Amino acid sequence: MSTNPTHRGFTSNIGAILAAAGGAVGLGNIWRFPYMLGQNGGGAFLLVYIIFVLLIGIPLMMTEFIIGRRSQRNVVGAYRALSGPRKGWVLLGIFGIVSAFLIYAFYSVVAGWTLNYIVMAAGGKLSGLDPAAVAQEFSFFTQGSFWPLFYQLLFLILTGAVITMGVQKGIENMAKILMPILFLLLLLMCVRSLTLSGSHEGLRFLFEPDFSKLTGKGVLSALGQSFFSLSIGMGAMITYGSYIRKEDRLFKTSIWIALCDLIVAILAGVVIFPAVFAFGMDPASGPELVYVVLPNVFNNMPAGALFAVLFFLLLGIAALTSTISLLEIIVAFAVEELQWKRSTASLVSTAVVFVVGALCTLSFGPLQNFKIVGYTIFDLFDLITASYLMPIGALLMTIFLGWFYPKVEVKDELSNHGTLKVKAFELYYFILRYVAPAALIVIIISGIVG
Ligand code: PHE
Image (tube, rainbow, N blue to C red):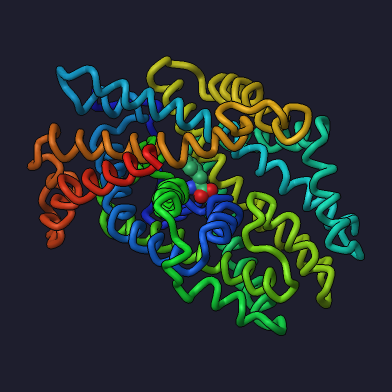
């Protein structure tokens, strides 16, 4: 069981960090985080979010890395390998695969939008429009069928191509190229946004907590957002963890990745909110926030057309390194558990995701009145995965590693077989066993009760 010829991992620690940070940093940071924060009152949401990332996010990311690296397996294989005779835990792996499918289905819709917006911005189609016309362009595009489906498929194919190239040549190399570009673009956008006149109001909204604006649902959203953004609770980091070299430090690696993710989310807020306020737009406008607000900003600044292209490129790059990690969860499972060829696995998964994902795309247009418990298919997939499946998956995972898996083995993996001193081990283990599950139970239940 312990050697697996299909298993070839990341070549260096920095490669692992960039690949996993690429998986974590995505639309979740630049598209979802700002609009969630905008809808949940600003600064207070940010504060709760930061607490969740540091207190629960980092330990849970370490937990996934431990499970992945210990087992050297995909998410299903990992639970099978580590659970011994208690076969039921394999279901938790399958739960992860299902979550990955659902996330990929709606995520690829928004990822596809970035391609359309790069093309529109580059062709000057967004320049010179007034805010109403920008909003209209967005509805016109997203309510259509052909183009949004076309771009979604294009994005899925792009992702599939990278995954077919393999872990080192595809995932790791892509991350090494794309992540530095992403950071540079983001910093450039920050400078631009901060030099807009009237930017301080947006910064106040982002950084000054007003707890009267935060509801119980808002707290659940912050938790869901931290899981979504760190890709925790469904096996992405188990899969990538299985590619981390035996000599790398899981503690340090997790902290780097989580900090990268947090910083990108905050910087995205710094790019977006000053602009939102400077141009009198509504921060609570929801999923279209970056698509209907930012083009106005670009229209009102020097070299705006260029910045528009750069921004949507940034968004597209962030999305790509994440869709790569989503597809890898599924493909690693198909390759290792079902013995499929990597290329076949990519192709088949991509096709299946496209069928389900198309329903999400169409839920902005032809299917916009088709609602399940009051939500469109797109909104439902987003809500179910981030607010329920990921926290529930994470809860079960903490129970598995904290209560069923032997403590000595956990310590052995985290300390690289005792060769490292892990001073914070007891703290980590305490969070794993008590703090994280308790917090998760309270938040999941309060979210369900409302
Ligand atoms: N973390 C990614 C983002 O922020 C989304 C994601 C979730 C990717 C789960 C993989 C797994 O965009």
